[in-house]
Image (tube, rainbow, N blue to C red; front, side):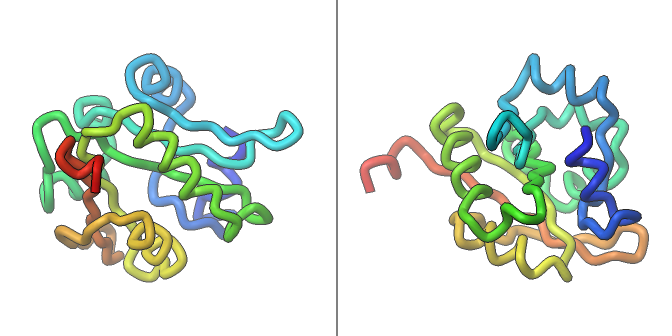
Length: 154
């Protein structure tokens, strides 16, 4: 929760939504949440959740209106890395672990169009731009990632 708070816009961060602790707890029981630690401290996390779990989050509903993905796709995000740990491959490592846990599921996510570091990182992970939307005056890009069983040997 502390890392999420550090990355809210009012603290200079770029997260577009804030998950209450109760939602985080519910998500952790149903879908993968990857947590990165260094010396016992949380330095990053990657949340996935079902569409239904996000029914009360307006910005996610806007994303899903622009591109809903497969019926069983997961909402990917937020992904958050402690500021001093960025640029070290941690986001990619968490995504690789997610793929190991859920290898053939589609992930749908959004990134604010002016967040060039996150856009670059997610394109490097192999995600594809599939749509865009405007929410509260900000432009967002929607990405999707899906690897079929046929692609595992490529």
